[in-house]
Amino acid sequence: MIGCLAATGPGGIRPWLLAGVALLLLGAVCLVVRPRRRAVPTPVGMSVGLVVVLVVGGTVAGPAPVARATDGDAGTVSCPSAGSTGTPARAPSTAIGGDTEITYVSGGVTVHGSYRGPVDPARPVPAVVIVGGTGAVDRNGDAPGLATGAYRWLADRLSDLGIASLRYDKLGTGATGLGPYAADPSALLAHGYDELRVQPVRDALTFVAGQPGIDTDRLLLLGHSEGGPLALTVTTDRREAPAVAGLLLIEPAYTRILDILGRQVQDQAAAAVTGGALSAADEKALADWMDLGRAEIRAGDVDPPPVAPPLPTATGYAAELQTSVGGNFWGSDPAQMVVSHAYRTRYGREYDAIDPAHLATEVIVPTLITCGTKDFNTPCGDGSPGSGVAAVAADLDPALATFVRLPDTVHLLRDITTPGVPAPAEQITRPYSGVLVDALTDFLTHF
Image 1: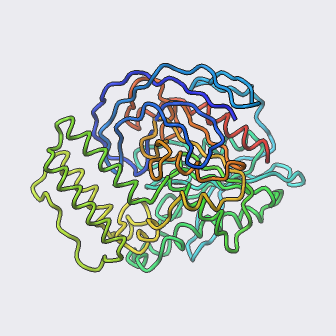
Image 2: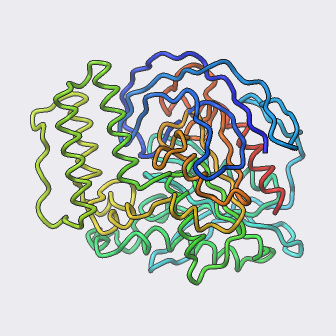
Image 3: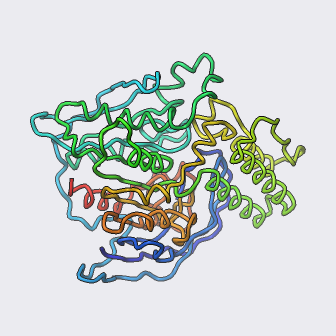
């Protein structure tokens, strides 16, 4: 397929501190390639990055654009700009109806969702289950204080293409809430990640397959952020669920979760030291505390009381970062566990054991995988193991995979064409990625 790079502009550090949703943010370049194993082009313009619960901002800079590129007999094309689409406009399909409120049961939990099915069930259509990411994010991609609408937008794009969809409120969010665990959240601690997070995806597929007018040979999973490894897990281990015919990994988590969170903490701390908000000594103390917590979780040694925070008198940014590290690497609050924190649990250990790059080697269906070049939560990386989404793309079968770098696109799927990266509240005022729309259209045309 065609490869092309788009410019990233000069950037300046944009300091801001904000409470946010885990695994939510951004990156800059456009490249569409068939990945070769471990032979992925080095990304351009990566910058200091962000988020677990706090974000310290960054800078984006890059070289002048490469206007066109060729790839064998694929021909020559110009790289589309971030805000435009290269595919000619097409009239939205009228084959799919509007949202219908539905429920299905998974592991004793009544899961609430929004289903869009065919207007005429006599004309079978493909269907996609949209699997959301980490945090208090509901079926629409909305979290308290940050209504992104990203998953509803994805459902809209699927409807435009004549494809049915289901998006749902995962346990701990939206209408699903904590369900039978609401009265005693501590009962969650006896349950693992597969039961509470993976099985609802399998059961969502089963629900969709049973709806009138759905072609069960054309069922797909779309995973965003944490939803990426979830979709990979179900695709490679479906158990009693229907087979998956295709996979869409949109800004997916790219390595084990505690390593992703660790990188985010390190990047935040380094940026804070550079900006004078954190001392080098406090940075090291927090890093050592985080590393110890991660090692104990992975060793299964979580029964002893957690080690006390290393900065008991911390204030300002040091206190905020310490709270974030404590919640993620030392926490065991069951209600937080199923949302975005508290990995010092059975659930957290099982979640951390999932390695998306390893699962990618087992995928045998067509797969679209994307990374936004201003996405610092799930960055493109340089293709080396654990560096970012490009490494996962490299482990997919090149005969089945389509890897697309989205120019100037952040984790919330918006285009940020101005220098730097604004806060999420500003990001959601920007347009969605036109290159992502093209990628979805091109990939899903085959279904």
